[in-house]
Image (spheres, rainbow, N blue to C red):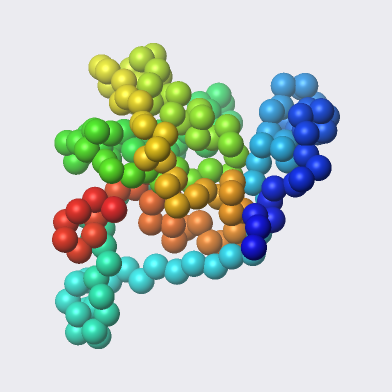
Length: 182
């Protein structure tokens, strides 16, 4: 079995010749088929229930969802396309009273390679952290060895309708039944 997204005939010259998928008119578009995940088939599910309900049915409790955060931004007016997760993660960490050093693994879902790079850069940028996240200091640097340790959507594809059940998507923090961070 091999990754069906890797093309043996790919080279920098071919990739550089690809036209942007979105911003076709300005000449500044950067998202192309070379740095974006292909759409693939896929499915996923999450059964979210109380511990009592699961135990009554003999189902194992695999994780506890102890908190979550949703954020949005006005990307149409320059606030940064796909940058809302930076806000949600910042607020979630503040609410939990923890930082990046307290987390063992990070799942950063990305449909575009640039998404993860922009997110990581934003969390380590003093101006972004102050002006957008309202923080006096940067969130910090995440060790690359802790990011997407089971692969990523760039490696496996971007399955239609399957990413919503990705428990770690957009930096959510998961804790297993023993209280250990997943």
